[in-house]
Every structure is written in C-alpha cells, then in structure tokens.
Length: 109
Image (cartoon, rainbow, N blue to C red; front, side, top):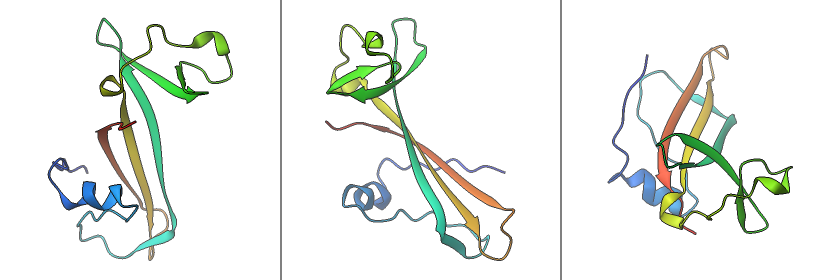
C-alpha cells in the first residue's frame, strides 16, 4: 500500500527545518521511535535528465566519495541539488511491519 502526500505546504517542512519530527497520519497503530531512522541521498539531474546520485566531500559534489576524480564539473548550483529523504519506522505490536515514507526536497546550502 502507498499514499502520496503533498508535503510542500505542510507543517512537516517547518518542523523539519527546526529539527523536530514530522507527523504522517495513519491508522496502523503506535510506532517504535527507537527503531526509526531517516536517511538522505542527494542527487542532480544530468543534461539528459537522468538522476545522478552525489555526495558532498570537501565542499565539492562527487559521484563517489572514495574516488576524488569523480568530482562533478561544472559544479551544480545549489538550486540543482535535490534530496530524496526516507523515514523508516517499525510498528510496536508487529515488528515485521515496516513503515516507509519518502519525499523529495531541495537542498538549501
């Protein structure tokens, strides 16, 4: 099952900018916050519109952090770098159920 949420004008974006937790309403039951996590992956769109995942290393965006020769040239402008964020949580009464929430955002540098 999946649900698409328009998070652009929501209170969640304001909460996240002040390091508070987002709220996603569902009726699944209580989630175990001690087993939850949020992951982030930065990406840019190349000239052909394909997604290129990048990592920031020493102030530069690279395709692969362990390879210094993978620096993107020209460096992307801040408005061109986006992030996909993923929130994971486990249901308290059934640990086999994993809640996954993903959203896209623009990086503010």
